[in-house]
Length: 279
Image (cartoon, rainbow, N blue to C red; front, side, top):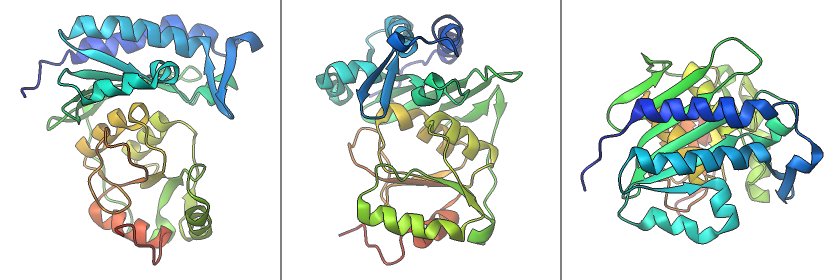
């Protein structure tokens, strides 16, 4: 199956437009009636909904024959996920990543889009409008074509070899209880661990070298298809916890990202001593 011509610049401009028109006007001005709880601790706002409507309406016009899977679409109808199993190119959309931060008036949020064909991510975009500071951040990658941040090619550097000098993120909320205890007990062996509650910002932290690794357990495609491609195209290394390749459509859980294979092995052994994920 041939990869279509991907409209990289048009998608980037759509994300900028969406942030300017549908997201930032609501920043720190949301009313209580404009925030809903989809499930305990999982919020959606009028900004999420408006952003997804705009993106979902426009993306298919940029690529003939394509379809869309959006986070809010799937919340309304889980069968939308079946589009990922079809032959058509699929745009996967997270219209407002970090909704909880956004609703709390924190600037740690992003807009993410990826293009998936036959189960593989072909392109990814992460846009951070940075409403409280000067300048935006736009990360874009094409499979086999490298990663660019604000138009500049980017390649990450390896992490320090000693875990006590490594910085990273541990998303433990969704870990099974037995694994959560092991991971939280191991966290003190690193220089520092913290999480932003926004996958888009986690990937920017990995790209910049602010973080050398990141553990996720819940790996929904709209949260990780774009970032996974962007990070690996910048030279990063991502695997499932059993060491197998990450595919955004496989429905599995658990994923560890690190600057390189050696760092991945070191972090994995530090976080999960004696745990065999292959059984």
